Length: 114
Length: 110
Image (tube, rainbow over all chains, first blue to last red; front, side, top):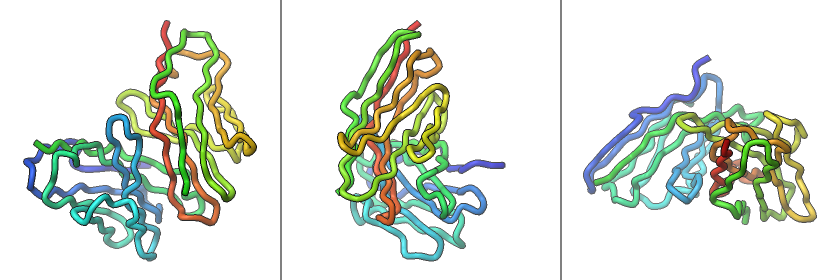
């Protein structure tokens, strides 16, 4: 079946602009995660959605970052007033509720802020 | 707080040599440990989990609670093992999120 998809694959934006990154999880996966992958920093957890529960936003680095998940499926990560330090690869992952830690990752969106 | 440490950013070995990628964790509860791998131009994917005690692609990892370690080992490295390896920690009954180490880039030379 289809895996996790993300769009766009690459995004170049000017400092101060807003960007939206999209994630389509695997059908039937109720858990959805966003991570940020920076050179030398590994994977940094950003936000976690599970079913109808309130999302765990504890990893969002600032209030410029927000995310939503509509209809329990597609998720959008929004970064407002982008800064150069936001440049990174943003990864989305999904999993079944019964095996939360067995996560399936998307290809990522490479964000470059100039 | 949960923490995962991978002390080596880079590891280089020759084909056929044994390889060990180190992972140490910090967690007071009952941990679940995983290794994820990202091959060049491919997605990050699960390699193995400690609870299944399986061997995947010749790799094994044993959870040592006394040393709080979960090192990944392979007796004879192959060139196709070259990749980025991430150790990850989940908590049973905890926050339901994985904490990843910063990764080790393994290069297997011919």
